[in-house]
Length: 238
Image 1 (spheres, helix red, strand yellow):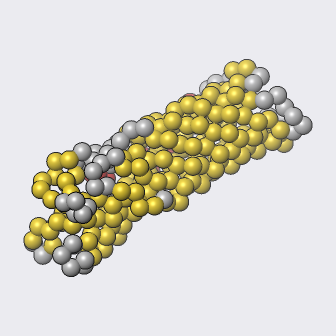
Image 2 (tube, one colour):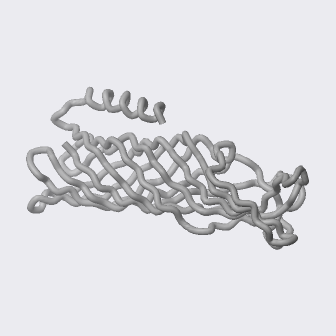
Image 3 (cartoon, helix red, strand yellow):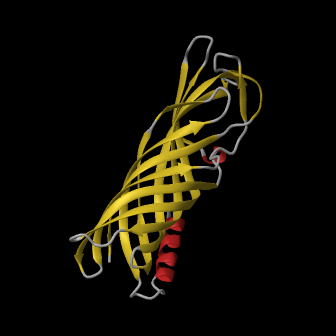
């Protein structure tokens, strides 16, 4: 946790080097609903997860109605996934199927363009579009492994999932929102964003399945999934 915080602090100081007349710095808290979309034979999405993000945002106002928006965010997201799997139980290799509730943590840097309306009363409305680059720094999962012979389950909590997750995640950002001016440059913002992942978050191969979703053979099949989320953004710009 210390390394992401040090990255945030270092980049905040770099932001403050820009002209203060054109730059607004702020804080943002963003709850989200996220899910996994697997693209591998035998794998299936098993539901969504609730997460959140928080961090620093910065708007570089390049014209009256346009701003380049970026920031540093500590992002928590995840999803539920089932897939063919094999474990060694009592020193016996056992084929079956795992359902995992995966929790992922990233340092995310969004790079977006905000298109703003003229001020209407105290409000400005905006559309937002761009990309985000995220670096994974922690991954855990609660897993249930099911043996097909007797449907017995082996449950494990807080399993280290880091070896299964790619370091880098890229995503497309599309959003709508509004800014309410309090005084001078200080505004409250609220918006809704779709964070659409476009890179595979899984780093390991997986097993083929026997037609019923259980593992068979060797671990040599592509294991692919993207991670998407709907994000509610609430923050303040100064």
